[in-house]
Length: 137
Image (cartoon, rainbow, N blue to C red; front, side):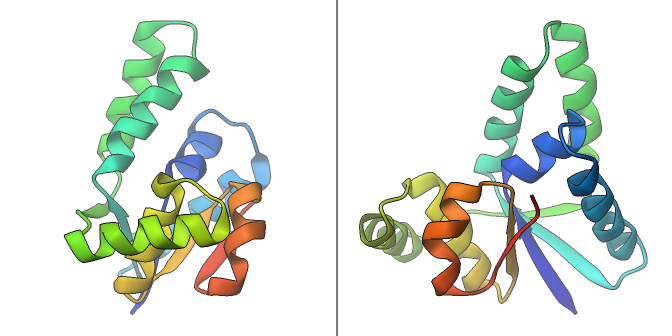
């Protein structure tokens, strides 16, 4: 079964309607998840990053909470990085000149034989040679 590991940039661009192409692509993935063709994975950090994105992406607390409640219903399986994976994320982040946060998503994706989905173009450009990553826009 195909697996995708998603970061906050994908969720936020979709929920906040920042990109029609990202919304369409992620919508297709969600349909495949519902059909049992795809698994959607992430790390537990995602919920805090998404909550923060809604905080600064909306002007009203009620709107942020509405988006957050919808997000929490997404069929995402959450994982926490092991100590070894955390160390690897630190090492790779130094090699790439990226944040440990972004790199940790990628390291976990690889550990779970998943494709890392991101809308973070800067990270994608620096990390695409590691493989197992798709830029959604």
